[in-house]
Length: 247
Image (tube, rainbow, N blue to C red; front, side):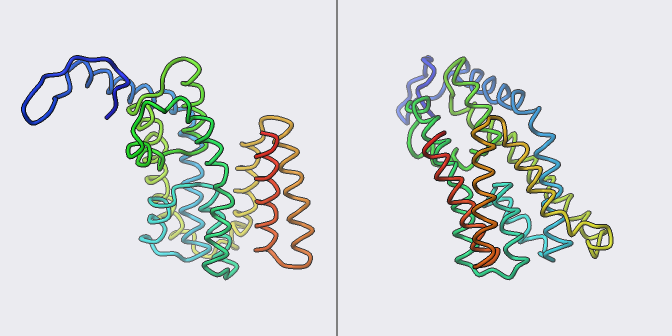
């Protein structure tokens, strides 16, 4: 996968076979990433369960579409945003644009981790990047302060979030089938509660609070004239611009 570990190889006419030492080291890094990410798995499971339940009970998505979003989009906040926009009857362009804006922070994550990943091939990074989330980024950011982030560690950090999210989405969908009409249980508040929970988890510094406040002001002002979809874009643009300048 990469040459991050100086190991011995067995030369052969059809290529080089990785040594047992290299395989053992990669396995150790992969499992270490799972161990480091485990404390975050609890919140991932909770959000995934909520996503699956809301997707079925509020938006009436089928199982295939619900799991496809988790599999291919794989971005908690963005998936909740997609559900909210679908519930409002937003068009495809609005949904795609809103999702891209909300996920703009991933660019900053990549820039931050980039200097620690130069030893990995571009094609491998493109594959591993699907597992880059808020949680896996935080795990790898801590890792960079101690040692090199190997391909195995990157894969482990991503999969430690990816697989629990898929499973919890499935069980959430099953729970949504039993719930039926969400308003009967006050679950029509789920969107607001989910986003407030996501916001609270992200606020760790004063500048995060400032970004949230500015985004809220922009969203409220824009919503008065252009509606909810435009308010979402305004809030996302303001918070992204603030983060790009002051993060």
